[in-house]
Image 1 (cartoon, helix red, strand yellow):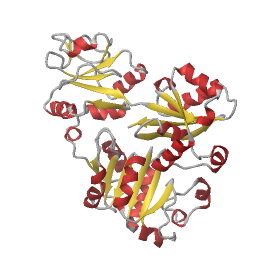
Image 2: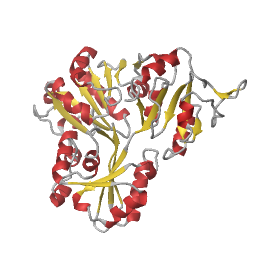
Image 3: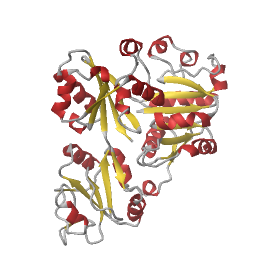
Image 4: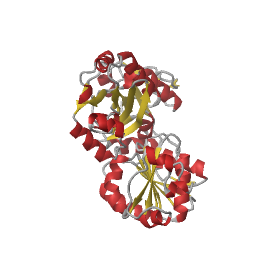
Length: 410
């Protein structure tokens, strides 16, 4: 995960440091307004990230201690000019300034509640923290609650289902690393929840890593029923429900709670059948692994690295949809064997495409890797080349002779 924090005042700088420290396990880039940056000893207009090498030496701003927890510190001149890149590169944008400034700056880049980053706004005293954009799928509401608890702020959340303590299906989708489809049905389903309707959750028995989905559904206290995919079309046409797995029943008629001819079905599946206002699908996001390895690395080491990397997200390697690497590794037998073992396609990308992904997503580069193959980032760049829009789920991580990065497709 990658977050960007924007500050323009002295108090905002201090608060940005507290936010960075509160976001454990996340890469946090702090953007300071250029005059603020210059006041703390850095050259005006210097927009380079703090690299792994210079981070050890420290820069003037980081050396002050307030931003010691930040992964990077950058300057910005005009907020609006940073947004085109920020909307692509970061999973959450956190602004310490007036909400009106933020609204005007982000407005031209807002595309969809299913793909836009979370947007949060705080005053520079940290009294209030507002979930402004992508509250559900983007996770802004949950991040607002988390930061409010750690900063002692007042969380301001305005989505109706959250205010009424109801679990919306698009919130659940975020917890399950899934995407709701069709998007327009979210209004129907969330509105029904607010009117007291029950939603019927059906889980396709053929879903990859089904046991983990079931564990997460139970953790969120969601009643569900596992259904064979061959039976789902008939069920979605209004058939009767059978006993759900691990959920309460209406004892009078033996139906799943809320089931019937006018039931609203939330279906967790990689496949989609009926497309009408009574069916909302939660579809798994594609998880792509970028892989780099030393020459002659065994398939066993590649598989072990992939398993450990996926474990960091709470998944097994079986959840992966695709592998990617540099064309330099196209003949690497251990890598090819690992892809075959997992029954996954693997793509190999030329330097020109990897360089374009590095530029688009602002990826850090290793001088050693750049000297050897011509570009300084393989894992993250290769995985991001597989999708039109991606977000880094797990930044590049080194294992024995193998490096792995994981990317969610937005």
